[in-house]
Structures are given as structure tokens and as C-alpha cells.
Length: 299
Image: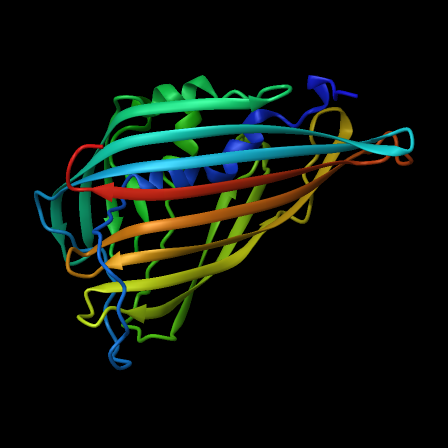
């Protein structure tokens, strides 16, 4: 049995969970290198400090899978929808000082694909907001960023995440084995004015360094918590969500830039209809996987 499209959670809800990651990885870089054993446990600095004039070509591959489950009669019926997005961009470092860097991000291409019985189209305004756009952003040493250009230059679908890049690096020097944490509030519904927000709490760990100390390997684990008030949706439907985030990062200390990054976000939500307390709730699971690669030459 197919679930009517009207019963599915709005597509924009899912994009609010990971859209900030799309913009964050536009400023990433990868310098290929073999992994070797760490030497000692010296404390090092992990800070965004690239060179003026650097051009970093980035490829972002992102996949989102949404599974909706609802009980019909005496059995559960599930529907799975998938969307994929590939973004190719150039990140040009325009200015660097002791507090961070100013970067011009040029999106060269955006490709999307969809699969699933009901389909799950990527919002067109999000694609338009990225395709061929030039955005100037200011990045702190810890990796957080804000948009320097007027928000009016972007479609509404992208404004909510462009200014919400999270900090990922430590504010202090760290040695292998040390940990640090960051938190970020994101709009789960994609409609900030509706009050539907969630918070990512992430703990980062410096796992190891290369023998030269030029490359750092970092792991990340955390939770995605929805506002406990479970904001009311249309037609008296309430939603409670929770989830997890995990991943691994590489930081190139020689270039002063975040390099390779793999991240998985898993969010599980339960929707209840207040007017039908005896009706089985609808459950949906969102899994977002993201891989970032960069190169010195065009892809």
C-alpha cells in the first residue's frame, strides 16, 4: 500500500537538517597523502589560516534517504525516497588575518538525482541559490563562518544555512587524544519562523598526526536533539525528533585548511495527531551521508 503524498513530511523539513553542511563543505580542501604513525603527543594548533590567493577545488557528494513508516491495519507500511546532490566549486582565499580568512566561493555546477516510489525532489530554489553563485564568507580560525554579501542575493531556500556554518576546530592547542566540543542550532523544518529547531552537540577528538605533523586526523560524534516542546505542525500534528551525527575529518596544517570530511547524520522522528490519540503515529527516518573531496585541478 502506498502512502498518500499528503501524509509525507514536507520536503523542506529534511533539507533544513543538512543544508548548512552543503555550504560548510564549499570551503573545504583535500591534499592527498599517506597515513603514517604519529610522533609523540605534542600539542599543535588546528586553525583556519590559508594563504591569500589559494584556489581550492571542491567536490561535494551528498545523499539523503527518507523512510516513512505508518501502521495500516495490523502491519507497518514503509516508503523510502532518496535524493543525491553533487556540487563542484572553487574556493578563492581573498584575505587572511589573525582572526581568520575571507573566502570567495564560486559554485561551478550542481547536479541532482532522485529515486523512490513517490520521488523526493530537491527544492528548485536551493539549486538556483547555488548554481553559478558567488558568495563571500568570513571564516574564523575555529571554522565558523558568516555571509558577507547581502542575503538578498540568495534565494530564500539557501539563506537559512549560509549563515550557520558551525565551528569544528578547537580554540586551543591540542595533542593526540584531546577532545573539544561545539554546539549549533539548526532549523529542522526549514521554516525558521515556525520555531522548529534542533541542536547538534558534537564532540571532536584529535586521533593522530602524520609523522611530519602537517596533517591531523579527527573523529566526531554527537547528537541531534529537537526542541522538547515538539512544535505543533499543520492540522494539530506534533513531532518529536532525536538523532546522531558521526564522522571523520582531516585537517591540513601546512595549508591551514580543513581537508577531507565524511559525515553521517541520522534523525528519527515520530508524528502524532492530537485529534486522534488512538491512531498509530507516523515515523520517519532521515539519513544524510556526505563525502567531500578536493583537488588542485578541475574535476
